[in-house]
Image 1 (tube, rainbow, N blue to C red):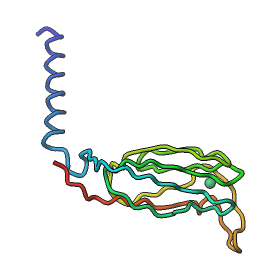
Image 2 (image 1 turned 90 degrees about the vertical axis):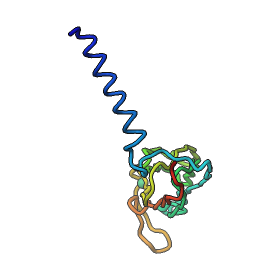
Image 3 (image 1 turned 180 degrees about the vertical axis):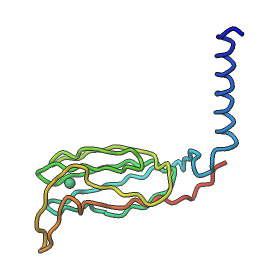
Length: 144
Ligand SMILES: [Cu+2]
């Protein structure tokens, strides 16, 4: 058989398999959803506090999150949310914005991704590793 025909047949089979998988076999929980809702969320790294405020966030799967991250410190921080592929530097005394769609449900951590030191705040010793929060993504949307 002509090798181009063979390659053509393989291509068609692979493509058809992909379409069948997406249409019939993809688990409900993995299907893309959109709530059409936009969540504007602001997270602040408070001055010399080594904490993110707030440290808990609750949204719904499919929400578009428009995040504003404020760094009040004179040194850099970062914000990372591994579950959604987010890793952003938060330069000293500045505000950054970014957005993402919450594609999966569950509890996910966000944390400071730039080593930023440690110190005393209100008699409490806090460090870079205390800059951690939880984003809870609820699964409320039913996929078609
Ligand atoms: Cu840090």
